[in-house]
Length: 325
Image (cartoon, rainbow, N blue to C red):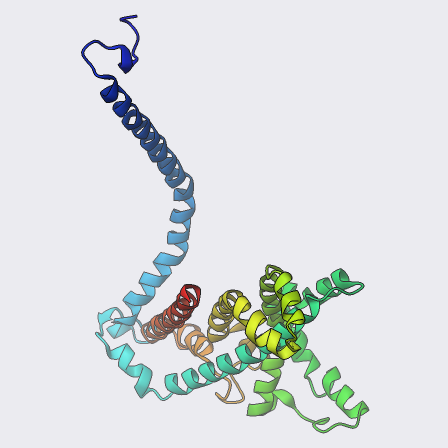
């Protein structure tokens, strides 16, 4: 009996004290297990974190370093000399950055608005039960599976005035713009870019919004129908508020993707005609790989990262406010 480790039988120790110490021992054991699990989790994710830091952190810090130096390979005499904020001042004095920023913001607003509206319509249609819905869903999502480069090359060919089918269809239907050289004009080139971008990315908006619609309880729609609510009232007062978290998540991804657009513009127009479709990513590419000016290119890259973080932070604030209300 004396060899037992049970605190309740130890002489001189009140039963109340013995009962009081047992939870502390259990809590200590639980804390030890939690610490072990935490250390195991850190050990498991450490290789991935190291790889991600090696891939993303080094280029980021290298760009920051370049942005504060004269890193111009065509000017060896001043290469690596400290430039201070000169490269950032050149963003506004070189007469290229601000117009490219305006084009980028304009394209972002228009493309996100168009893709959100069309994606929401597709999601609402696919959320309804009908025969062959699974096949239609798979067909709608195919463009999103196509690589961006392939999609851009495809649409560049389709907008070709000689061999493309866009002008052929317009002429066959006796519609205007049947003889348009789409990629040689400012507004027609932007129209072609917007169509190509929307064709590929609208399915992404539809996927996210359809997932949000799927979790809305059907009972509330039946109650609204019994109360005599119209389809528009049901959408505005029930569907849209309940869909807002999924909608904001989709908007975050698409806004950042549109703001950082490069491949579609570079493949279809190369930033032309002239500089009329040159966005920030294309300007950054030209600074790095055409002009070999890593200092100016680094300043553009840092500015783009800061603006992307501001956009993401604004959406996060809106999402947090929406969740609290």
